[in-house]
Image (cartoon, rainbow, N blue to C red):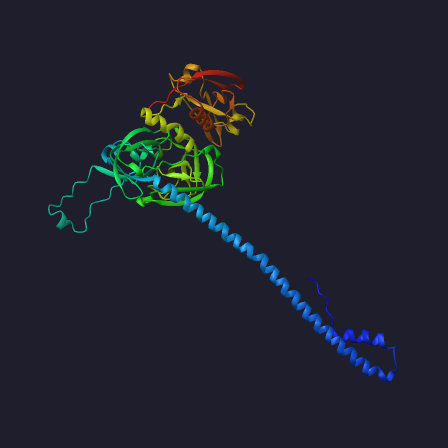
Length: 456
């Protein structure tokens, strides 16, 4: 706001100039005094007016600022209300799962060559049994003998109510090999459960309780294909056995892949992978496995399954089986006890720029490079070819050659992960698909009748 400063001296000068030719010299002093008095009145009025204007401006600015503060408070309150509403609606549907497993059978011959002290994944039972309490060995063991350790290991995880018939969904690795399963609801009620069906390739399982009655509050399933990076992600589960825990983050990435099967999580060469995995930074810890990941509407967009961590606890990288995979697999587990995955019978990788150039292909060519073809498998019967040569890239021998799958049933394929995801989401065992491949740089089509993925 610009203001004009009016001083007494300037008014006096103006007055003198105006009155210099208006009367006798003798009266000049009196006139000057009158002008000074008038000028002082003008200055007082001006100062008063400026003060009023400043006050009005301050009130206006304050009035404008107040709604912004109220608006921010409203947004925070809305956010908090949304979270509490999601928790209140969904938490009764999330259960705590405790299991008892045969520890000796779990450990025997499964991890040859691995160092002692196995890493933890959410819900995976403790494979590092502690030593007996030796605080007073003479008193506890007078013969110097260590007490016999239990042949069983306990495990814990999470799950959620699928329907009013008592079916509960969880991760396969939570209940695999369990000799006893117990489900605890949000109100503290515990009931025994039995295994209905399991699928290690999607790491999903269905268990069932009887007599739960009104405790069965099925979740609302969402559409994971609509999920976008940056959206709110809400996890509810039982980390470290702390039941009814909610954590919040965002969707960090989409289209990830993780090893399929409990044992694959500890090896560097998984045989199969789970595609279309959702990545989130919502804190996930051991015990969260089988729990829910929700959107801001309280819809289940995935099942919290694994974490990437050097310590075994949350590092801000959690992996979630998408809800559309759950919707596809779970009904079949309930109906048949298992799920048949379509099978090509190949292994391979995503075609990269350097390998494409080594194969005399355009550097921008994308697709799934066939590495090995399983003897007697569907791809072998269809005549697909695996790596036929190798080249040196950065001093390393890299297999090259073989067919490059660039489309399936006319849909473009840019990576091995996309091929796996397409097979899971769009094909069935026994179906014949048309693969578009590059062989020696020449495009061709090959029909392949899909088989059933063999058991691990």
